[in-house]
Image (cartoon, rainbow, N blue to C red; front, side):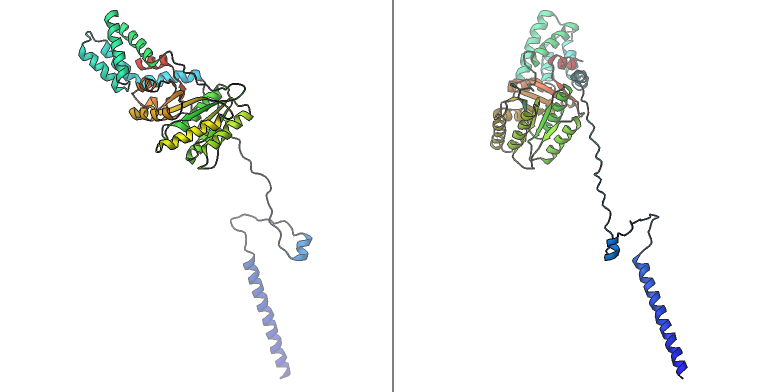
Length: 381
């Protein structure tokens, strides 16, 4: 009986030990899963301290800084090649006006109906009532004296249109300052006219002329405008001074000009807000910007950006801004998208300031200095 009892106890002990071994093995298999996806995870061997304390090894930390590719700096197009494209673009978009006038002036008989048709053509092109009447009167006088054959009619029309657009206006953009200080160009206009894009395109023109430029993103109420200006600056290696969204525009303008003065920059271009909902508020804002800038350097140019396709609405906007700030020049954008090139004549007459730059498309270098003879030649084809 005693032998049987010892045998039963021995079998029980062996069974318990075997069961414990199986449970431990199962737990280990769950705790250390096999690597998946064919990727080997190799950990460094434990240190003596880790062996002594039983602490798991620290994960490896990659201290190498990420490699950031430097942005590619673009070389903007020269002014000469811009003017070639100016003629081509204008002749395509505005050529209908010149061809229509030439067709009418080349008739065998210039009767009253023909002169009325000439007036209608000019008015449709947004030349304006007073300039149209003056031009028609001069054409009638000269063609009566000089004859009405086609070659003479074309040359007379060309001369009178150039005179109408204006040859005695100073169309230079004053981009450099005096006494070693930068020129400060304030760019104003309603939102949607292409103001921020214009600032970026003017920067490209200046860079092509080997001038150093700083941009001031003072349209702080539109985050998209600030980001857009920063992108324009990056593309040509120009620094952009910006502030917090919704911050004080005058503060940004001040810092931009200060940066220009401290770093010997040739030109500071300042983009401004263009909200017309509150004329008094806009007047206060632009007035404040101009005052704080002039504590450091003179504002050498105030450019008003107008959308050429807006016609009479553009003129209303122009009047508001001319009352608020002393506009010295006009930038006409989207001139290639409108057959109403006469807006050049009308806006100059309304404001008494010259068109200095024209935008001719969506490309980064689709802006050029305005030239009266080139403009008229493009109209006439």
